[in-house]
Amino acid sequence: MTTATLSPTLPSKAALFEARAVKAGARRNRLLSLPALIIIGIFGVLPLLIICVYSFLVAAPYGGVQWQFSTDAYLNFLFQRDIFDDTLQFTPDFLIIYLRSFLFAVVTTVICLLLGFPTAYFMATRPPAQRNWWVLLITIPFWSNLLVRTLAIMFIIRDEGLINNALMALGVIDKPITMLYTNFAIQLGLLYAFLPFMVLPLYSSLEKLDFRLIEAAYDLYATRRQVLWRVIIPLSRPGIIAGCLLVFIPALGAYVTPLILGGGVHLMIGDLIAQQFGSGRNWPLGCAQALILMAAVLVALYFYVRNTSGKVQHG
Amino acid sequence: MAEPRTIDIKDQPGFRSIAIICLLVLYIPVLILMIFSLNSGSLVTHWEGVTLGWYGSALRNAEFHNAARNTLIISVTATIVSTICATLAAIGMTRVKPWRGLAAAFMVINLPLMVPEIITAVATLSFFALIAGTFGLNFGIGNLILAHTVFCIPFAYMPIRARLEDMDLTLEYAAADLYATPWNAFKRITLPLLVPGIMSGAALAFIVSFDDFTITQLVAGPGQTTLPLYIWNQIRRPMTPEINAISTILLLVSILFVSVSFLIARRRAK
Image 1 (cartoon, one colour):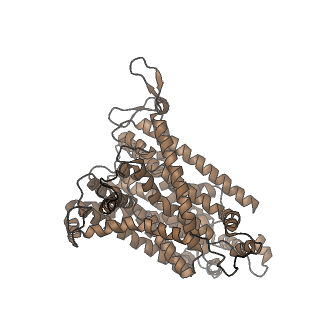
Image 2 (tube, chains in turn orange, blue):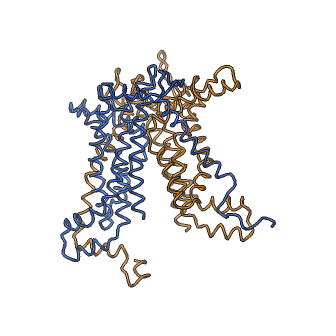
Image 3 (tube, one colour):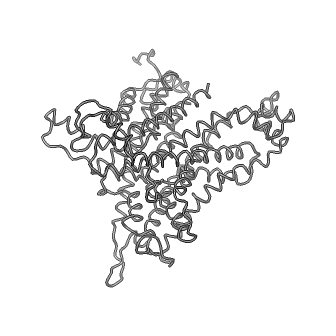
């Protein structure tokens, strides 16, 4: 409505659209979204409800569930039932894996931000033609097969891999440094996997940066450092938040990376959940763990929504 | 004060080096993996000479054929179904007056992007196990197609919706003004203008389905090996550069489809 009053000669898009919608009887168009909603509803939302139910059932001996109510899956997250006297004993094993995963995800997010921000800023300040090439070069790994990219890291850091071979050839070390199947390998793999997820949202935010504001800051005798910290970074806050979320959420639930680079020794939440459905044969426990991860993700999303909607109110 | 004012105001010290380092870090491991697919030795780590033999042995491998066929059946079907659904949904959610539940519908469409893949994977596995146990229903490879369609929809939806929002509504308005029926206006005006968005969306849907590992691994039944699952099975055996060759093929498919989607989007922007 406001746009319409601002430009009296041209009706606003919304006004045009309403006119067209009425003319064409487009009210029925909303039904067109039904096929997508039904497919996602049945095969995407319903399964999530099913694991909510499953998490309150008892594990069947060979996988699957028995229809009997129990809160054991949640109790098992922190406690283990003693086989002999049926008392609950505190076992932090799962909690430790959750905290480890959280730590991995936080470190991944921070390092991706430290590397990704300068990269995105550099990209956004290139001439347009060059900018397109940079975006394509970052977009390709973004969409490339994660399993294959993780495999590439594995080839490089294994005992007979490129890094060890090079260091030994140069005489820096006599014996290969063990890097594969360590925490270092997982951390490296996560950084490698999710770096493009940080760069792209940061870029799309920095691309819209109004450089007149930077010019104004310099005119007012700001130093480069001040311009960066007091002008550029505050202006790109939505991109920083979006990028951190896009890295943090998949890193927290990472499955492929620890599976290949952790070698089943160093677990993260994702592998722990999958294990309950495989060799662990404890589906209710796996469902409960998945829901606890989901709760963590929802908390992260809540902070995102709160931060971004706050942004809208201020300007 | 002494700082000269002729310097580029956009410049920040050290950012160029970090950007170049990032690019090298992203590409060097993958390039090495690709180069070793041409290694004539049978070890994945020691270079001996150049050959295309590993591509030959991969392409003659019956297991690889089977995996490639499964992958194509799943990703082509999922791409077609999800792109059609996404196109309809994008129209139903932009070419209407805001309706009650629109925000909720938007959330449902985007749900697969927000839920971590491992959760979707175990939830889908539980779901298919339940309907198999209760109703004796098992769609075979259809299970994987349905699972893939769900997470392909939001990827196809995004570029189509973006295109619909950028489109000049005056054309559709004019068509309606000239007594075009809604269907005719859609077929003759909206759809042709929407094609680039649909192609871009279909390309993205195809990549995410083609590359999927986590959900496929948990949901796949016996004999439903896809290419990523085939690679995973190979990793656990003594490896030959054949795995590099297959990985390279997968990467090249991704690169092809990303570039196509990217170029379509670029042309649209002009």
